[in-house]
Image 1 (cartoon, rainbow, N blue to C red):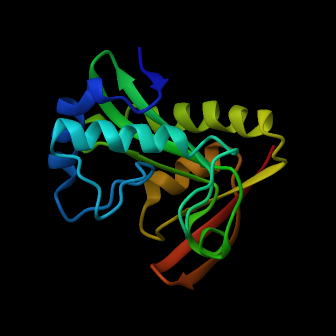
Image 2: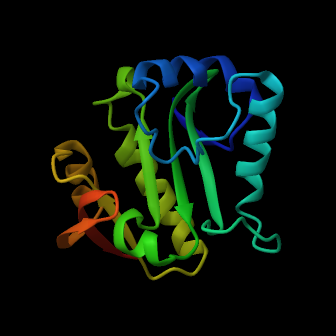
Image 3: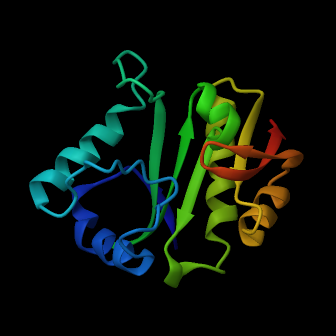
Length: 174
């Protein structure tokens, strides 16, 4: 059975396998991975997962351009299947292009309903944070993600050009 777990160094090997499936140039949505994060060495990976866990602590400051966010990994035993994050509030970029929730499922684990299952669990967490609605976005050609968002209650607001290309923008009332 899959479960949501906080980022952990114990999944390092499986996470690296997932990254290889995506390819080195592809963005792993929901993972919180920055271009300068060292995830190849065990020490760098441990520091990165610790930093991800810290972003959810609203008593601690976050770096310029970031917002407080809670990160979960979708795992089955010791196998990393994907990631989902809940941004506690939006800055200008997230309002335009990124949204409150981002997720990504490794290619070999897709079409199992994992994204929809994880989205449902994170919508519950958003309610616990006192949010009354959340924004999700996806690329116009990503029909799988659009279906997941729509099944989760997403209502399309618009499709717009953003700094990172065109995005479909959906709101889900909680």
